Length: 269
Image (cartoon, rainbow, N blue to C red; front, side, top):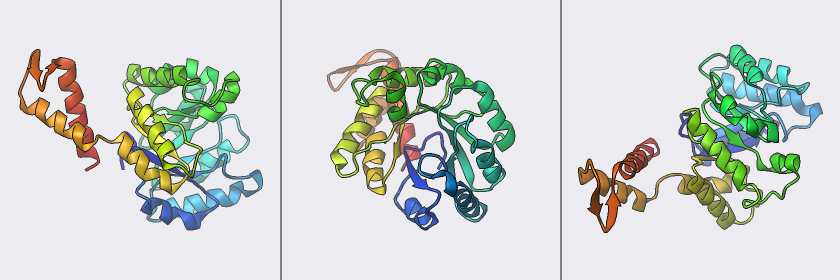
């Protein structure tokens, strides 16, 4: 799956290679082998070897490395650079354009870079980070961000941050951003609601931490059948200026929205 259009991004601890194939079978658009939070320091080397073995063979994945200022970062990048199955790299705690430039130099231009914004400084630099060469999308990490600004990790409290990330992505002309995880693993409705609200804000992807979240995220982030039917009616009407359709006004922005819905439907058919 093209990282630009991937809806569901499923984390798998890189210490659990027996789960890699199961993650792929979950229907997730992108599997992320996690070398950061999910891996204790003493297991980092084993995690790197497992991730490298997967992507050196027939496995395809994204990788979340440790932050640029971490003692583990350089070893992470060295372990995955040049692997044929590497599609994207998530950089947590992203704050520095220079760090992204160094990452691109080591990984090459074909690997999609996804800075994960988890601090106030990262958010304030969002446009510059999104516009850095090699960056395809931004991602949000709401738990660390809430700690950094001393706010509640709730959608209402962090609405300003999510909106700012969407606007920064558009200003930099990169794909819609990837929303943070839903931590409630036992309630599919909460995952669906979180993803639906994120999509309404302009996010076009979402991070997942369990395979059961994938279907809800894919459904919420992709266009519904009703959306597609509406978009098809708008485009088949052949309107080029303001007009009336199904009791609603149709003009240029409405036509653009219909075109985008049909494009996304084609990407995920």
